Image (cartoon, rainbow, N blue to C red; front, side, top):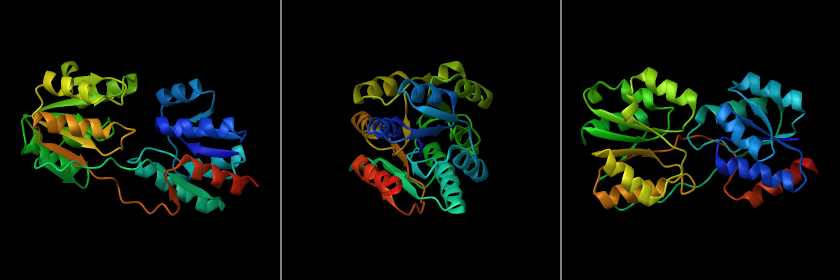
Length: 254
């Protein structure tokens, strides 16, 4: 069996493609929302956050022979735990990752190494900060003293747990945009305008994640754009082509 860490839509598609080829595949996701999406694709799903020891136990229990890590490009902890678990059990590990979207040649582009730096940069660029970063880094922005008094708009998944977390962080209902992405250029334009954004903050999750559409909408509106770089991780073997994943699986299962 191959365990796919499928925290993204393309990760789920990758797992479903391997299953259609006849390979025994199951997927691991963190949230119930992700579980429902994977289940819709007819995949066997294991749900819940796991540290390295928990993931190693899952690999033993399922008799997995390898891990394909197709988690989100910014899910550094997931990848770290997967590499540790595979090393402990002597199992092959492959990182599958979508490439980043090309950055625009834009004089209002600001690059940040992480969310904390992005929060500090955004504070000096406008009073209304549109956070198109997902939910996991929202606390960093809410707790940044330089952003006190700013209006923060959080665009997040329409998941009850995520919405509850936003409310607990202090986001007012009118400052939460709960929609399933990725978003088109036109929809980004509408949302940035509707919320009178002064600055847009995002991650570079690749074209598949809609990063290019966020970039282009900010550029068209002349808004400062803060892009958080991907975490620097030594994955070992990494591929961006599903065909290369298929070759890896054939090697492992032969």
